Image 1: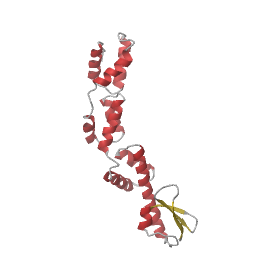
Image 2: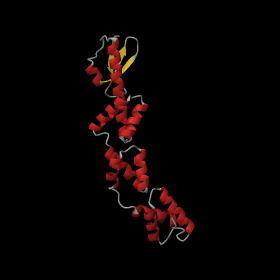
Image 3: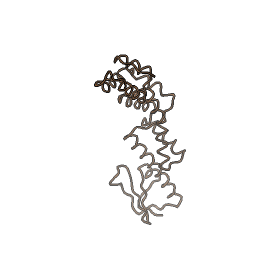
Image 4: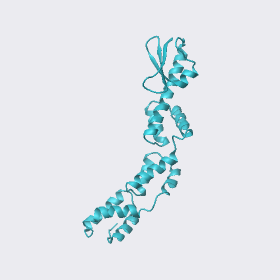
Length: 205
């Protein structure tokens, strides 16, 4: 198999296109071009062509993983799941995750803190935050450090009650609905009761 033409891609920076004599095209990174000493007119054995294709496939997986992380942070488990959806083997997925951790693009500790800040800013309580950390595959060993950065729940509860009870502070049904909503948002009943007392209301468990 002869490389009829080798040229840089006009669409993707750092990508090269190797046009083979049968008309097929190998999409390669600069690393593959250098590693396999490719040039127009070079003749490849069948095994060399397979090795180049496999190397290019793995490089493509790394590029997709990096592009995903720059758009949307992920936990290691989430990224590994995505790589397997892209047909990476378990070994390839682990190797790519290891490399991206080394480069600082993948960091479960930073991701845990980001998840906690995001949901806390939206007015959710600790139970909801723990649920999200679990759902996103963040190792449990990292949860407490992330949660320790939170302020107390008083501010979020007071803001929620001020919004929900401003028009009906003495309506027991409105108070109960607000309490139930806070519980669904992940706040403990002890914190909810304290918040209602600050508002001058009570609710049964």
